[in-house]
Image 1: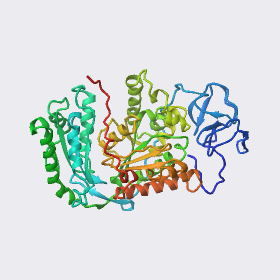
Image 2: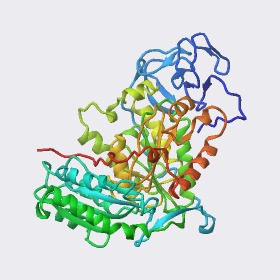
Image 3: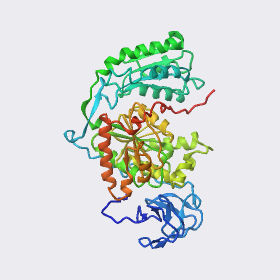
Image 4: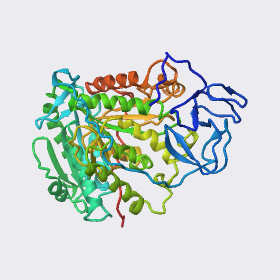
Length: 515
C-alpha cells in the first residue's frame, strides 16, 4: 500500500508498486512533462487520476497496478503514454485462489482497551446507533400507505419525543407479480425481516394489502417474526382500505412513541459496530486514498471487536484471489468463489454488466479502464485482515472482523442488503461525488480527492484527498475515519442525515422473474 505523506516530496506522478509498469498522475500532466524519477517524458496529455506507462509495454503484456493485473495492452504502448480503455484489453486470466495461504488472525485488543461509543442497547443485546420507528410494506400496493403514515409525523408532531430520530417508511416495487416461492421471495422476506428487527429501530409496523404473493403470514412464518409490543401488522383489505389503514397506522405509531422515547444512549464497546462498506462514482484515486484509508479503519475496528462488511460482488471480480488467500478457512474462501461463479455462469451470462468487463461512464471518466481496475480499489475497503465469513444477500451477519456479503454493485441495493444483515453504519467512498444516504443506518461519505470535496462539502463527511496532498498518511486517515465512526454512532449527524437523505434508498435486490 502506497503512503503519501508530508515527509515525502510530492511530484506529478505516484508509483504504487516497484513492479508496476504504469504510474498514476497525481495532477494533470501536460505533453512534454519530464518525469526524472521514472526516466520518461510524457507523450500524452494526462488527466489527474489516469495511468501513464512508465516503460514500454508490449502488446499482450499485463498492465500492472499495485502489482495486480488490471488488463492487457492491446497495442505496443510507449513510456510516457496515457494508458486507458483505448489501449487496454479486458480478458480473463487464471488466478491462484491459494485458499487461506495468507491467513493471519487479527490481534484483538483486550476488552478494557477497546474504544467505546454511545449506543442504544436493545432487549436482545443488539446495539443501535439511531432510534427510529420503521414502517414496511409487503408489496408495492401498500407503499403509499406506509409513506402517508410516515409523512404525518412531521418534526412539529415529534417535538415531544426528542429521543426518537423519526418515523421512516421502507417501501419497494415488488411483493407481487413474482415467483411465489424460492430464492427471490426468500430474499425479499429476509431483507424485510432484517429491517423489522434492526437495532436502529425502536419498533416497526408491517403493512400488507391482502391478496399479494408476499403474504404477511408467509413473511412472518419464514422469518420467525411475531407481533408484540414493538412489532405491529396491518392488512389493508381487512382494516377497511387505504384511509382507515393510514389512520390505524398513525394511531399505532402514536401509541409506540412514548416507549420509544424512553430509550437512552449508553456507553458500549466498539465491538457493537457493524459497518457496511460502499463505494460509488469511483475514480483513479479511489485505490490510493479513500478505499485503502477506509480499509485501515476497518483493520482498526476489527481489532476493537467490530465488523466491516465488504460487498458488491461484481466489484471484487478479478481480485477475488487476494481475498481467498486471506480466508480464515478454505470453506470460507470457497463460499466466495461459489458466489462469483453464480454471477458469471448463471446470473449475468451475455449481459452488458460490470462483472463482464465494463464499468459505468462515470468510472471511465474518472480514470478506471475496466472492472478489474475498479475491483482493485473496491476490495481495499475491506482492509488487510483475514476474511472471516461470506454471506448471501441480507443474511444476518454474526461473525466479527472483515466479512463479505454477496450483493450487486448498485449502491442502494447493496447497502439495503448490508443494513438488513445488521449494519448499523454505512461508510461510502466516492471520487466522482455520489449523493447517497441511508436509513435507519447513517451513511458517512468519504471523498477521494480535495477538489471534489471542496466542490461538494455539503455532501462529504471527510476529505481523504489529504493523503494525496501529502498532509496525512493512509494509516492516519484510517484512524480519523475510525474516530468518525464512533462520533456518528454516538449521535453526531452525518452530512447525508443533515440533507435528509435515506427515505428512498430501501431497494431490495430483484433477482427473479416478474410475471
